[in-house]
Length: 72
Image (tube, rainbow, N blue to C red; front, side):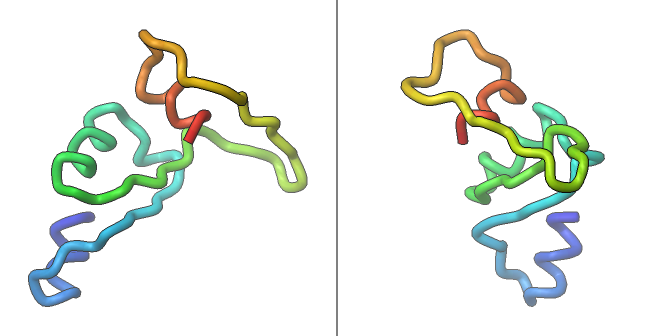
């Protein structure tokens, strides 16, 4: 998807990329970050109108990439 986006942008990389939950993986997040692209990838499905209360405070050490996305 990144390569196709770059081709559409005539060789330029996007600064941010958002995708649905089907693209979420630790490898995809690390790849985008390594390319200098801020990833905005859904970590799962939500029902319409469902609200999430994001955690507050510092991000605890030892969290997985998916767990860290909740803090973002």
